[in-house]
Amino acid sequence: MGHHRRHRRRRGRGRGRGDHERPERPRRRCERLHRGRPRLPRLLTVRRLAAFVRRRVGEGADGGSSAIEFVVLTPVMFFMIFGAVQFALYSFAEQVAKAAAQAGARTARAEADADPDGWRAKAEDKAHEYIEQLGPGMFTARPDVTTARPAAFTVRVEVVGNVPSILPGMDLTVEAASEGPVERFVPDGE
Figure 1: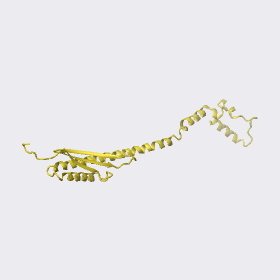
Figure 2: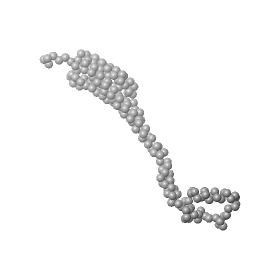
Figure 3: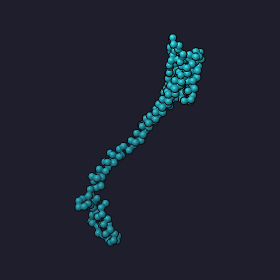
Figure 4: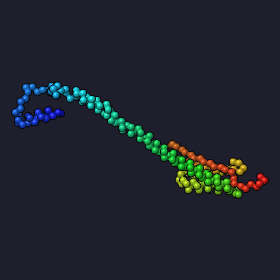
C-alpha cells in the first residue's frame, strides 16, 4: 500500500463522518487507479502469481519429505552405528585371541623339550590366562585352546572363540594360531 492512500484517508477524517463526497457509483477493485493505470485484482498481479507458484512448487510441495527421509534414513544410520561397534568388538576379540595364541606358543616352545608330557596343559593355561587378562567377557563362552605338534620340533597353539553379536543373525567366530620351533639344546655333532 502506497503513501497516496494514507494521505487520502487523512483528508477524509478531518471533515467528519458522512461529510465527504461519494462518487455516484462505487468503483470496482479492478477499476481503481494505481499510479495512473487501472489496478488489476490482487490474484491476477504477476508478483502475487509468482509468489503463489513459488509457494506451491518450491516450499510447499515437499513439506513432508523431511519426515519421510527421517523414517527411511534412521534404520540405515542405526545399522551403520551398530555395524561399527560390532566391527570394533570383532577386531578387539581377534587381537586378544592372537595375543593369547602367541603367549601359549611361547610357553609351549619353552616347555615342550623339557616337559614332553606337561607342556600342552601349561600352554593352554597360559593362553586362557591371557584371555582373562586382556578381554574378560570378550567371548560368549570360554574359547577353545588346542595345542599340536605339526612337526618333530615344532609346536602350534590355536585359539577359537565366538564373539558376542550386537546385530541379529550374525555368528562371528575368531580364530588365531601361532607356531614356532621348540627351544632345545642341540649338541655340536647333530
